[in-house]
Image 1 (cartoon, rainbow, N blue to C red):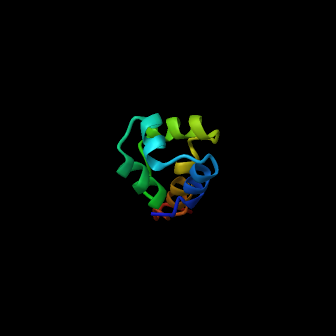
Image 2 (tube, rainbow, N blue to C red; image 1 turned 90 degrees about the vertical axis):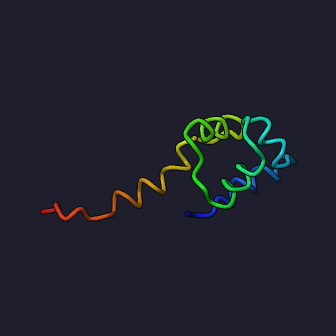
Image 3 (cartoon, helix red, strand yellow; image 1 turned 45 degrees about the vertical axis):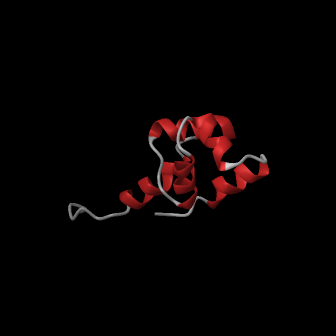
Length: 77
């Protein structure tokens, strides 16, 4: 689980509390705290966060995909 400090930084830059963001995304404040700490959000929540903050929602999943794509399955030539 990687750190999503960049999300916390965006929230603070907008002068929003976790409670405000949670309300905008329609989740509990503790879920926002978990996401900021590194938990990967659901696709639905990722899309909402991307929309309100103005970043591609896939940002939460790119690193995960990169990690998985580098795991050898044993079938490589």
